[in-house]
Image 1 (cartoon, rainbow, N blue to C red):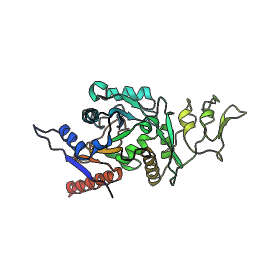
Image 2 (tube, rainbow, N blue to C red):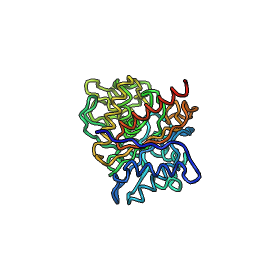
Image 3 (cartoon, rainbow, N blue to C red):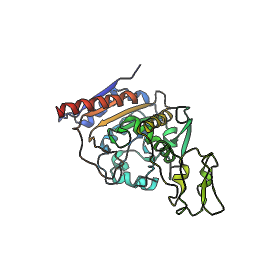
Image 4 (spheres, rainbow, N blue to C red):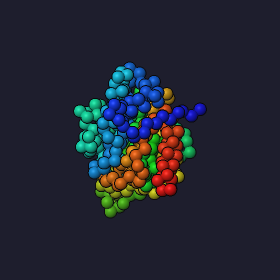
Length: 325
């Protein structure tokens, strides 16, 4: 039986602002039942790329942090490193960007932990046995957390159409190599002009498919290659290019499989908030934020990421029809 979805609109008054309504939403949606005293609680957020302003404001996150603390939980804010090389591709740049965007401890009230470590190698292989993957790479901090709150900004996305709870959970919990697995349907190739034969990629290939040949350049055996993406994110010379070649429906299926992996050990310990606010046409990974394509709607909460996403889409389409006549 599907879980309920709870909603607060954007109306605010002197005696009840939107932050107060978020706290009520937390209680009404049953989030308090997910957290036991001393639980390590991962609050999965998107810290926003440098130059982006559409991400969820840290003042909202602070209220969720305080609610977790009031229940005896130990919250931390987390996200995984990006596959593309921007301001969040490694933990150092990622943390700097997060703090620049307002997620300092003094504001958000919780420490920041990049879930897949310094360069995206800190992950757990979680068995899922689904259509595309036998196992998926989930950032270790998210996997090892006792409870999980997924706080998503609903907005457009160039691959999946719209990103909400499932996108934030699946793509957002995957390591850098996991993101390559989701984004690409083709195997990696070595650019011989860029490769310097440093062999740093060799030990990270789980299939033993890559080796430096007699010509002093790395070579990938396509018969052995698993397409895991570890060589792509390991190469310091960008000689094994990131591949973005994936059909949208295939990428969506892969994201759902990663979402299943992220929730594998979180039965009755995961909750979802979707902010249908600042609905920009592109992801918060963009280095800018375009004008919203629809007015602000409100905040939804549920214990079911699928139901929450469906409610988002129906609400958005209904409002769009109303605005366009």
